[in-house]
Image (cartoon, rainbow, N blue to C red; front, top):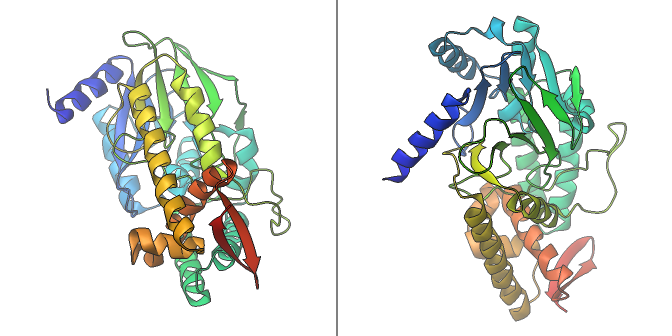
Length: 346
C-alpha cells in the first residue's frame, strides 16, 4: 500500500469515529492547514485556518460537503497561537455564536492579538541583532512580519482549557494536554473513546507533523506581560519541544491527526527519527563551532545559504535550538562582544 493510500485509509478510520479533516489553504510555505470537524454535540471545529476570504470560502465548502454551515458550529477549539490555526476564529464565532476554547494561558494573547504581535516583533528583532543578523535584514523582516498580521485577528476565549483537563462532548471526552515547543501554547487533544486499534487518537496540530520537522520557534513566554517588552532569558524552545515529544512518545496512540499533511500511524518511530535528526544537526553545528567561533546567523548561512537571509528568524530559531543542546552538554559556550553573541567550543 502506498503512503497516499495509507493516509487515505487512516483518515477514513478517523471519519468513521466522527472526526473529519478539512484542509484549508494558507499563504505560508507550509501549505494547507488541517482543521478538524468533530460531528458530536456540540458540533466542534478544531482550528480555523487563516483570516482570508479564500480560506473562509473553502472552509464553507468543506462544511457543506458534510451537510453543515458555519452557523452550525457550536464550539471552536484553538490549538495554538499561530495565525494559520486561529485567524478565522473571530469571524466564525461571530457568525455562529460558538464558544471559543483554548488553553487558558494563551487567552490574553489571542484577545490582544495586535499588541502581542508587535511585542513579538520587538522580541524577534532584538534576538536577530544579538545573534549576528545585519540590522537592515532585521528591519526588512520586521516589516514583512507586520504585513502578515492581517492573516490573524483578535478573538475572545470564552471556554478556557487547562493542561490535564477535559473537554466533554456528548459522545466523547477529549483530554487536554499542553505540549509546548513548536510554540509556547501548543495544545493536543486526546480522544480515548474513539480509539482505533490499540491506543487513542490524538489531534496534535503542529506538535507532530509527518513530512516535516516542526520548527521550535523562539517566542516570548506565555506569561510575558503585554504591558511592556520582554527582557527575560532567551527561551530554550528546542529543549522544551524535545521534552514534550518524550511525553507523547510514552503514550499509546493508534492515530495522530496533524495540523499539516497526512496522519501518523506510528508516532514512536517518527519521534525517534526526530530525535536522531536533532542530534545529527547539533553535532554538525558543533563541528562548525569547533572549527571557528561564529554567530548563530553565520552558522545558519553555512547550513542553508541565502535561505538564512530570506527566512532569517526561522533558521536562527533552528540554530539556537541546537546550540542549546550543545550548551546543555557542555560542548559550546556563548561569548558576547559589542552586543553580539559568538559561539565557541567549550
